[in-house]
Length: 377
Image (cartoon, rainbow, N blue to C red; front, side, top):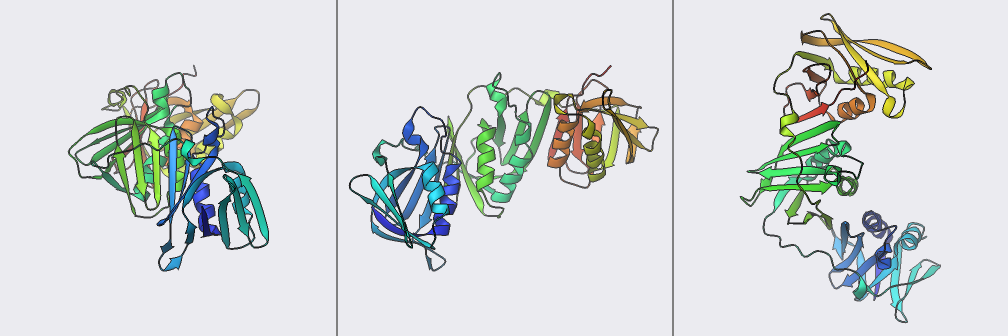
């Protein structure tokens, strides 16, 4: 195996596949990056069994030569060292060749590294997925869907199914739901599909977070293929495989209240900043903030930590309808929800001091957040 490649493009691909490389594993070869060279270009692969990422570098792009192939072949190189080496090479071009069996020489300018490789035939094969039923979504919308839901997944392994985001796809409609049983994030979107099949799957939150880091913010389409136990995201020069979580996701639709006793409309930015200030005195799980309505003019945001001090702030409301209200909630949950929402104004709907309350952008029902209040009396 021997080829010359543009360093920047190699670094980019290595960074992408590194997101899947296992740091701790019982399969030593998975701590490596597999490099495959064919007459059509170079492919890098990283995997930790749960996530697999394949990044392809074509021979040329937009008339610019990226790779010159001298001899096809494949090798697995230790990811951590290979990543550090390519980032620090001195010249724009890198020559990589395998000599004496598995010994790999990396040259750039006057720098030369020799790495001991592993046999690529021993590297686990990526899942073979029949690409019949394809769902298509613009890259920027997919990133938005992930950003607005993934933060609400559970970090506890006591209920593994809640560590993922539930995707329901039917008749071109997609509903993404995440909950850790204390809060819930839901986002709807339209997708293109060449199939009448409906899907109800749970994708690990970790997989979606890593996928989002790799994708650019373009409008380019991403193809999604779902099987019984895998999902494949296919973008230009990139394949991203993730296993699906097994089990039934709880029916969250019954948690969403159909009616409310108090509705408040506030400016998103003003409200968020007041919550941020109110949370300055608290920390961790005990960071509880109280909200009280002030007649019909606004809401009072307060926090009282006896051993530290207290903070009180009034936030002007655009409108308040319904009963007076006093409620306490986790400040972090509220800040996460507000940062995920789009729109300058939000509507918060309460059904009582100890019932989950709903946060939505004003005039937009494509997404909602639900937070469970905290008992403080």
